[in-house]
Image (cartoon, rainbow, N blue to C red):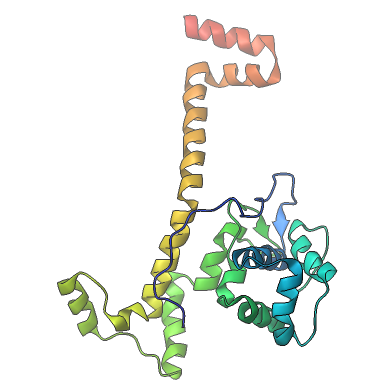
Length: 232
């Protein structure tokens, strides 16, 4: 069983390069799995050969170093690689990570998921479920003998200022913790983009639409008109 809380950590220098802007507008889910495979291997401090050795018992065969390289290379889209459910289970067991790990979006990836209207950075919503889908999950959880925490637990949590042990193991609570952790991970990037957008509109207000077009189109007519407007 994995811990109830989610560690809120920042990216380290070992994080694989973020997707470059010249990449295609769409991404295949298999590419996301490939990205997270590499993240998992590096998290565990394994070489590609060591990763192959660890996965052997779960895959039923020993992958060559070239095969591991091909898996990781699939993220860039240069090599096509499709993963089946049994392979994902092997990756989760071999790297001792939850299946969820292999579906988390790479930081800064805003591409559209192939044949959907969803973006890569929205994958966590598809994996964890929207708020209106949680009750459907609880219907399945109850079938497995995993009921929601009783109302009394919520009252106890309010009194003591901390969730009870039952609540900590509850999916709704853990989902919220994971979403908060993901928001923390993206916080710096969102702030940076917000600053850039703010500077853009500040500049636009200063030079006006005509001035902005003149700057980028190198058209003196636009620039001259904008200058006259500011001086008048």
